[in-house]
Image (cartoon, rainbow, N blue to C red; front, side, top):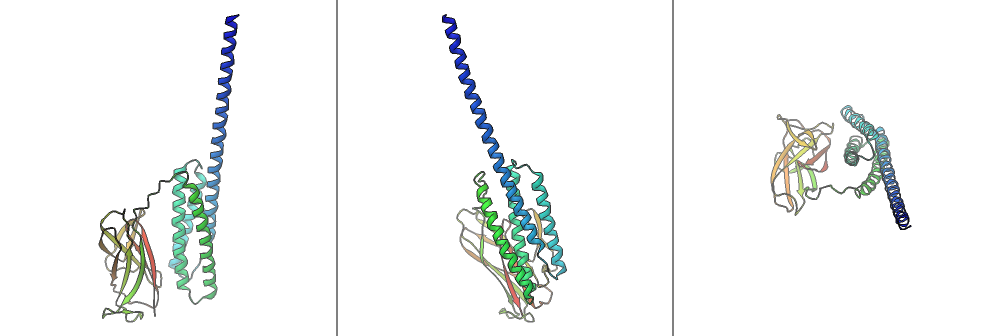
Length: 288
């Protein structure tokens, strides 16, 4: 009788342990399925954002053949990105984060093209209205993307951007032969781009090179007899001019001059300012 009682207790104990294991496994399975569902939802939302960006690109058009070629290339990049996202499992977080970053870059590029189109077609009222609508839609999509990025950052906060030097107060002016500013294309002798590097206490000190890319009214990059190239975000970019500055973590303003051999035409000139780590900003100049 004593052995039967002991055996009964062992059976009951094993049954309790089995029930606990079954409950634990069920909880883990449900939690895993919920996480997978959440990640699939994020992937679907990201895909919708990319499709919206693709639609935004489809409404951009201009009479400038060179700019149209660039727009078509960016449309293809968006289409390829959509296909890559569709083929990627939602549980591959590192890839999804990478695609979100690429989407942000494509949005910034689209905004730059919108500015160019608006500048090249200032006398076309209908096209200006379309460009304004596109900018509004781009801002809306950008806000939605930032909300999505904020949500996904809760899963993996590994972005290191605090040490990147930023720029402000970017300007582009024309200088005549006497060294004075002018807005006349016929009097312009060179172009001067200025930028203020922002104070950053955690940025690396030392010499930093700043690059400028100036495009004329026809959308073509201005260069001199030498073709200069720098690496930015994995790409080789041609630049118009550059300057090295000793950055010690405090605000510092620098100006870079471009002297080309070509004659300056009437219209809007655009300068994009870069460091090797980031795009510092842009500015426009109207020459009459």
